[in-house]
Amino acid sequence: MTTDVKAAERRLGLWLCAPAAAFMLLVAGWPILYSVILSFKRYDLRFPDDQAWVGFSNYATVLTNEFWWTSFGVTMIITVVSVAFELVLGMALAQVMYRTLVAKGLLRTVVLIPYGIVTVVAAFGWFYAWTPGTGWLAAMLPDGEAPLTEFWPAIGIIILAEVWKTTPFMALLLLAGLAIVPEELHRAAAMDGAGRWQRFVRITLPLMRPAIAVALLFRILDAFRIYDNIYVLTKGSQSTGSVSILTYRNLVSGLNLGIGSTMSVLIFITVAIIAFFFVTVLKTGTPGQGGR
Image (cartoon, one colour):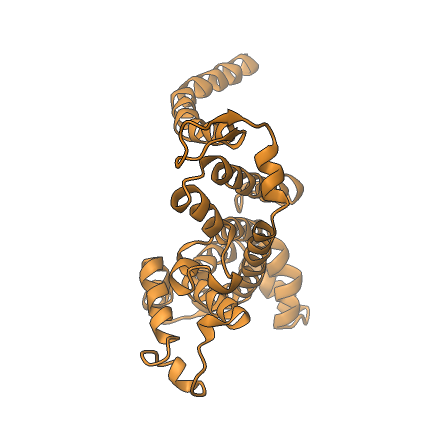
């Protein structure tokens, strides 16, 4: 009897979710499928009559192009370095916000201000700050220095802008993870002589693992699609463009739907692989709901 009730509830749940699932497939599935179809065609809007099915030719063209791999390398550098800094700084901010005893609401509001600013607006702030003649940061450099016109300084500034903008988001996710760590365990460990660092490494971090994995997943996926900061700060000059910038140039500026769609599909595949790794291999779950 109990089994029949559970089966009926499961069927009811599926029927209730079916309209939303169908709508999501229609809204999100069709653009992806259309991009995949375009990626197998020679389709340039400058020559609309010259269309043909070319199979994997566009993929061979993109994957053997040095501009694609340069952009892919830049994207990976920005993603790995910025997310690493954000994890460390976000954990420190989360600890401060969680442990502080006075003005908790004010502190959390102040910390979250950078994340509330529109990305393009924040990027223009960094752009003018580092531009000689108008920027307070550029004024600290020797005369003639223009960091946004050189590769590594520009990459560093892009990473700095990313870290400044999204560390509060990382801190907010980690703060939710801190809230599920029982204080009783910390008090028991302290009575056994464990120091602050030992309690953090042996109690806090293991229990926060699902929250850390979720925070990393969200930020890595977001950082890999970086567009706004690069477009405003360097416009991709000096080989600082990401895969999103390169795709935009081929798809929108260049009007080459075939090559641009191929790049879009490759970005989608990379993002799907990252998500699959976190969800399946690392068993990323919602904190407190069975994630390891």
